Image 1 (cartoon, rainbow, N blue to C red):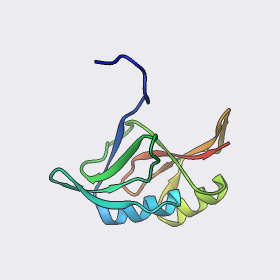
Image 2 (cartoon, helix red, strand yellow):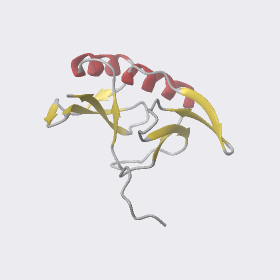
Image 3 (tube, one colour):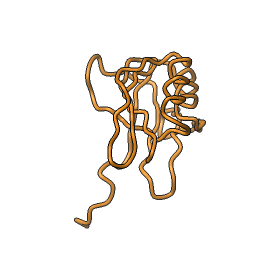
Image 4 (tube, rainbow, N blue to C red):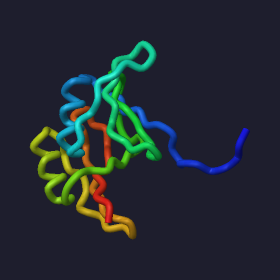
Length: 122
């Protein structure tokens, strides 16, 4: 067993109540369409990721009632535009823009109440 550190996260699963609607929302918010697939017994919508990146998917499940982990997603475009299209797709913006050394982000809520980070690389 290797103890070499890779990515801090291997895979992310975001529970949603309506896979089709959620996939459309996340595609609009991130600017990257999701790919429908089957993993094991589940139909899932896979988030776009690169060959060395961390990936994840949406699945039909029970979203956290309150709190829970926040998944930050890389998005296409300027953060102000990303926030606007996220709201138009039915999401809710939860925070102002936060500048960090390698970019900026804002917290948002998806259609099921999951909190996500909308990230623009610097």
